[in-house]
Image (tube, rainbow, N blue to C red):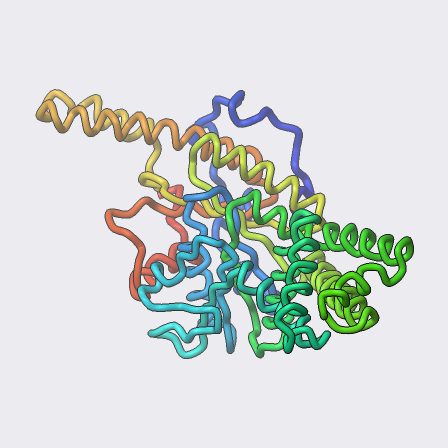
Length: 382
């Protein structure tokens, strides 16, 4: 199913009052609550993992990569978040080039930097126009490119993304997992084809109206001949647009691309997930998996725990009663939002509940262990 294949009109999360106890989790009625479907779909080439900040996207990306490594020949995890966390998750240094992950023979990771990509692109344009050999010429081209990348919002990130996709496509990886930035940045990434269409239209409009004025102005600063400058600018933009349009076509093919939404059982995160699912549908990008992280005792219900607490609280010390009381309040709140999540997506999405652990999930061994729960989830009927 696609992102909103049968998404019903339901109340916004803040109006719903359902709890997990109100739902009958029958495995025959709901899609399998795991990510096995991703592992079984051999045609997948691009897997995006996204959601609100701080919900565990990087951990989910690393765990999914670890599981894919069991089924595919070569797997790459790419962080597109400016605040990279892959190095912290795997406890090893990961750079701009694919870095083999210790403990695996077929899993690599890399972290990209949009600013550095734009600088690199400017330098390549200086070389193409011959301005790189002239200090004044170099500053002229650099100034022109800086004006261009700042006058059209998002074009710098779009060009950086184009460079990344060109690099990734030239590599020999069966599947690429994108550990994306928080939702807003991710939605911008998906809108890059539109941004570049607008940018290209503006440049072409300038070219038609002012002829070689841009090139001549740059040539005054020693930036090569007007034709060279104009060709370099338009050529780079056209190349970028072609790559992103090609990538966009692949992104809209559910056989090759899917998006895994990650959230936690809280109001803002569930609301953000609903927005993300709707936006993905607008962009025509397949999404049918939701991972809910940091769940307190997924296999237990708040009512069951409440009964135990009520019958035993008199025997507990005051401090223990306070701790259990806070835990119960948290559990009831989580159950309410998990219930809403199943109400919103349970019929069409694979909803995976991942438990809150007593320790951080860092290092290859812990990631491998935790990743098993993505494939063999906790049985809600036990």
